Image (cartoon, rainbow, N blue to C red; front, top):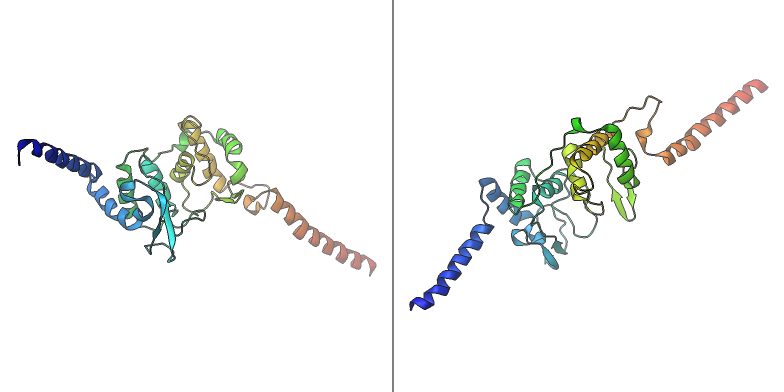
Amino acid sequence: MNARALIPVGACALLLAGSASAAAPKSKLATRGYHLYGQYCASCHGPNGAGRTQPQEIGAGPFRRQIRQLGVGPSLRGVGALAADFYLRTGYMPLPEVGPQPRRRRQLLSTSAVDALVAYVASFGGPAIPQPQTSLGNLSQGEQLFTERCAGCHQIVGRGGYAGAAVAEPLNSPGIDATTIAEAVRIGPYVMPRFSYKDLNERQLDSVVRYVLWAQKPPHPGGWGIDFIGPVPEGLVTWFIALPLLLIFCLLLGRRLSS
């Protein structure tokens, strides 16, 4: 083989070596995440987090419903540790079934497995996990911002609701901490709008997080709060509980007076 023939062969070898090193994780934690990704995520999100835009039939897998379904998932390039941590810690992923709205569940993978997967996805680049500082937030400002931008779906005290055919998750569930709230605001899971740094700066985000944490267990000095689930249930309580009791009291009082 002559020298000219060796040049393209050498170039191809260098190109392949470069692409392989770019795809290979650079830490032991990310390397473990690479193997876990192949087990739990690659069928929908494609190899190396490239995404899968064309539906492809996937078979049985861990935490997946044992039915025939088409796997399709967005690219994970650039989503960073932010998105990976949120979706894995909240139990949205691994997804049991493609199609229905993902719902919050218990964390399905161990904490060490989540850390490894987050490290692997973070190796593709993207934002880090937020670190809200609620002590720097303003509770009144947080209530105002939440009322303007979130209460339409989640209700004023975050007890959840409906946005068309989608379900707005209640924000007082166990495990919803400051980090989870901040991640959801920055990501905008499912039909929830995404609030960038331009929409909400760091201090405003701290205020929103502080308010949501306060609203998980708000004080109710006026009596029975019935979990602060809104004016309609409170009105139903008046009609179906208080009013019948009042009628019974009136009947008993009338019988006593007539006897």
